[in-house]
Length: 582
Image (cartoon, rainbow, N blue to C red; front, side):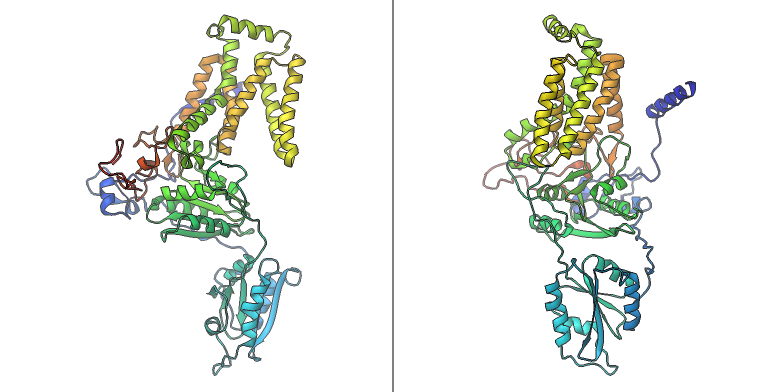
């Protein structure tokens, strides 16, 4: 007992004591707005000395360069393709476990009736019609002349025979294997020490549908799919700009999952882009199952209750954040994108806010922030009032509450926990049960269970109201991960309220606020611009009119701060409107 008490006290002391920052903590460098106008593509900051240093000079030693993922397959990363087609055929069969692998198709044929060649692809991952029309037919019918060594090079075939729209040469076996697994077709020709990778992907995929978890009344009705190429095309249809950069890497030594990074080269902070690449390339795992896996590998604070990335299934919201200067991460097989860096204000914003007039969108923001406090504090405040602070309740109300609680055998905290756990049970069951049955179960189950609990004198009627308001407040939070964190924190506040009433709630708020203030998302403080204080943004609690939002968020330090001129409504003559920000 004494040992457990000592361990508990040690944990409390560690929580409240100061810890120096870790050496590998990423720090987003501050920018100088005056130099930014002169050098738009270079971020500068003010060190203690008078000499100015660029971001690259200052943080070059801290931010490591992206590391290449090492593959542990039998083919070494540096092993090159042999000019002998028999050696290549034997090697490819061994690597793809042929003939055990029944969907690996290896098609040998001859060119000009004298040059041996073969293609390899994975059935059901390619478009067979494309292979027949663009690869096999032109190669088998070509009349190209051979050289003195009776050899036709792949370069000549690619330029003069093949009709495929995209081809890439490679001399590495591991490149061939990775691209064939990704749906491409590899061509080998006898006498050539390289292979030709031909774009023939044609596997089945889900059609573009409405977003399931981010429905809006106004705005785009397109959502992401599980195909990363389709998702990237949706973003490029929105941002038609040459500076929209798409980079990708393969993560997972067994799954070989493609992870894409999208950002605007002339807007996004290069230090953030470099840090995203470094974290992604340093992931060492056999498999990467989706964006949820990626988030847990790269987040700054893995034990924090609040999410440090923004997850969305909407292409328009992803594109908007890229235009603001953030970086989007897309994982193949996941119908979501992940946005970094983010702040806590991002968790209360939706795409619909920007399609509505500001006078409509602002009250919705107020409702969401109000729902945050309802979800977090209503049960704890009720517990504190009924157990410790009766004097704050009007006499008539406290008499009514006491009358309703007559016959209830449990104390207030047990009553709250029973109803909260019942609500969570109904909510989880409604999600797991498929289709319309799940929705019906959630509504009917809550009504029947609440009415039966009140009739059986297990809980009081006011407790049903409190739990219902708390649940509705949680549903009003637009970000699922953030709302889930509030569901967990609700029990944390209940525990402190049950021990010390309002004083316990105050202590819990200080602890949560302190932990949130210490968090960062890729170098950006989580509570900015409130803490630390930075340039105020017209898009936090009050969503200013679009034409007054001239600047991008100061917290993420974009290369290009201004996104529209002083007078964006060019048809209005005269000086800029009041409230204009330089």
